[in-house]
Structure formats: structure tokens, C-alpha cells
Image 1 (tube, rainbow, N blue to C red):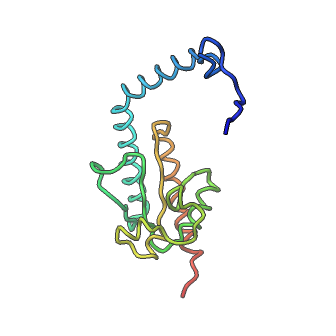
Image 2 (image 1 turned 135 degrees about the vertical axis):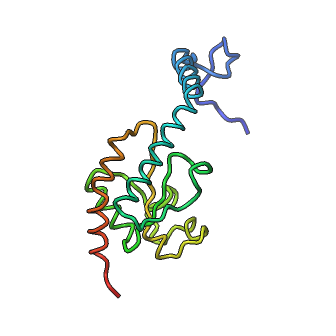
Image 3 (image 1 turned 120 degrees about the vertical axis):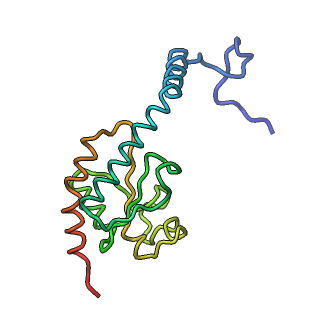
Length: 168
């Protein structure tokens, strides 16, 4: 069966592909990739310091938290998963969102799923612990004031989330 092409190439491309390559975009991408590679270690160190600060400062406000996952040296610098005992992560998520803080109850591929995180449960957390956990993502575009703002509201957010729990 012969398929009729929708686009026809120019003669300079042996009639295979039409159009001209976007040279400025190609050069710009190469420069951006070079800069990203050259500054990778600096950005990793920066984000790691923010992660350590986030964990330490939240722990001062809410001492009964549990940080889930690997230690600093063997973890991704930009992701922190914390269990806040006595809360429901959905309540924390909404209360933080109302304060302008983005967080997550799990990975993006399982967003909106009402079950506890299968990843956290495979790490040994109970369903109750997994449903009391939040994930925070940090990047090189965050700064100390972002962490300080989160810390300034997290105590009240957790208090409200705990108060909202239905007693069984």
C-alpha cells in the first residue's frame, strides 16, 4: 500500500524532510545544557542544605514527625517525605494549599488515588502512617525564606489537622 505524504521535503533534503532547523534554539539549548552540567553539583549542594533545614526546622516545631526514606547521603536532595502522626494527609494538603504551599500525598503517578502510598507501605509503614504522610519537593529555585514560611505555618496546620480527626 502506498501512503501519500502530508508534508513534502525540499530538494536540499532529498525530498525527505521540509523546513529549516532552528539554529538559535539549538545553540541556546546547548548553552543551557552546558550550564546545567557545570552547575549541577552546586545546585545539588544547595538543595541538600534546604532539605536538611526543612527537616530540622519542622522537627523543632513538631517533634513527633518521622522522616521516611533514606538518609541525606543516599537520598534525592529535592524530595522529603514526612509522617505527621495523628493527621490525615489530605487534610494537611488542603490546609497547606490554603497557605500557598504545594505538597503532595504521594507520587505524581498516583495522584488522586485514595489508597495509602504503596511505596511507603513497601518501606514498612502502616496504612495509617502512610495516610499521615506528605511529600515536599525542593528545587534550586526555592530559598531559605520558602522553608521558613513553611515552618511558620506547619505547626498550626498540623494542630488543625489533628483536631479534625474523627475519634474512634
